[in-house]
Length: 303
Image (cartoon, rainbow, N blue to C red; front, side, top):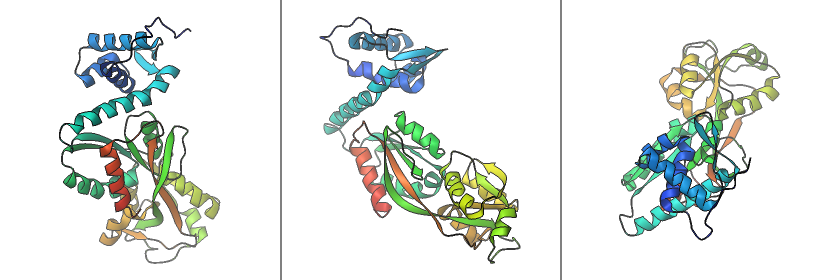
């Protein structure tokens, strides 16, 4: 299939065309993209066709009713996003300095327990900047940053990706917990007990599950997984109900342990520590709002 099309080498893409292109890349269709950029579907389709004519290449493949980026489109996307952000920065030079929007994605532990107070402090100092926080497992956060669907991601673990910069942010500790009224509450358990205990763990793909497997398999050799659940809160509720023992971030269980609904168990296994990281796309430079937010989070995180 030849992706080359006739084009005028003297012309250049416009911000309007690039805005529509980015919207289509994120939405998967010109109809959905038109809603994002407040244009009619025909105007969005025309802008995309003009861009492809200007560049002389097709940028999308059609899969059913969905438009998916091809190799040329994937190469253009981070540069188009960067140009649009630079244009927005220019606009802010002559308007209110404290305006803009940030899109943040975070894995469950970070998004549910660590980021909310940091975001609250940031919003008090920057009330004009809109901030959207999406919470998903680590794998989904990486995918969102790689696809430029969000500006920055916060994850658990030391994942890598060819398109992403993954920078250490802070440390976390995982602890074994049981129901507050568990018979072993306040006592030390041995490896044999841990092998036979029913484990309530996060789902595969989450940073907490990745760390659990990395810690439990060498330490126990085998263990019994009773349930796999999609959030920290679901694991906490199942454990508090007496369905089994869990392995969660100390940040996720502090309040429940203080309230007596969960208890930390002492084990013969070595302490389990993991890194939390900030993830950005290699091909884009952070604008002032993102740079300021990252500085705020790093300072609040002790680094």
